[in-house]
Image (cartoon, rainbow, N blue to C red):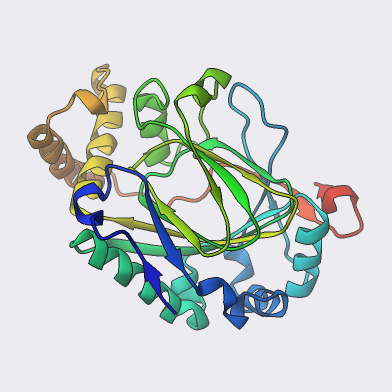
Length: 301
């Protein structure tokens, strides 16, 4: 069980797209039976169940669902035949079988980057053939390791014209999901990678991307993590949302020098201490249920 990143990763880490190789896809835990068992063991209330509409311009919100009354094998059958995208977040914490795998991945990233990684969250992604995950971004840094199936990923510059600061601020404050406005012309600036089993990628923080599955079930590990620099960036954005709302300022993250970002990050801790809230949940309501008897295995609620 090995994950290998480029030898020059330290200098390029967090600033460029880096590719890895691994041999995780051959592990029995990622077979159909193994995945069904993981779904049975995973807390069902934590299971992220989604589907997506047709890809196009604009902002196309993901549609959230549930699979409360199905076994893991039934859910896997729905994934094979339907249009379902599953995310088992914090699988490294909630599924003991996957903890050694997470340790190997995050250990390889720390060795490649020569820095400590915080807030480690390994999600297991299981998705149907032809699913298109719309244009979006993630606040943490991400490493995506392909285990089964093939997918194409488009990666766009982490710049204001591709991801407005105001929208990212809403994501940090959990006022919206990760989706963004998309224009076809963005593809002229995208790096395109065809991910196959045994491949992995990591890319700059908050770089927008979209993903298209090939005609096959896809299984991936999405590993989110933070460095000190990434935490400063995220917390500075948290403060930007506060100043935009209360002081009518219009900050843009690219125009902020690092010392100012560090000050904003420190201020974010004070703001959070004063405005304590319950742990945020998804702002998207559940509107469908996985039903193997329905078209695309989806029954609207």
